[in-house]
Length: 164
Image 1: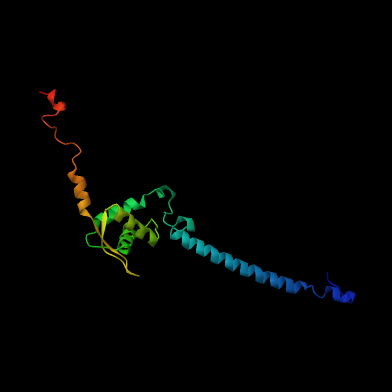
Image 2: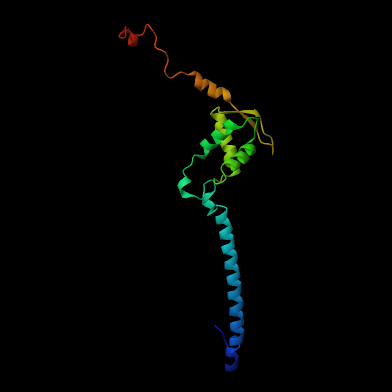
């Protein structure tokens, strides 16, 4: 509660109309400038496909959010001819799929998963800032191809006895 020693001092804390209008215009101008800057940021984020922080690792297009990124990386790794690091995989992925966003950690994690599934082999461990070096395990495909799902029937088996 304000206590005034005279009735005239009671209104001294008020501002005159001219000052009020000047300050109001200044505040409105700053507000419009900040709002315009925010719209520019929003527009540039939308152009880059970054509609929100929740979309990291996903595409801006809702219909392709169900893309299996790990399978895409697995297919990509099969095409790499020389030993590679996860950063090589990241660069190749961005080149091949520029509309799909992924964090750098995603590629490191996928390489670890592919190694545990024996799809790629680690040929050199990483150390400090140097990432591990991998190569595609072509032997894994050969082992799968060697398994014949429809073997020739054995002549002595009961399944072929009725054919004779």
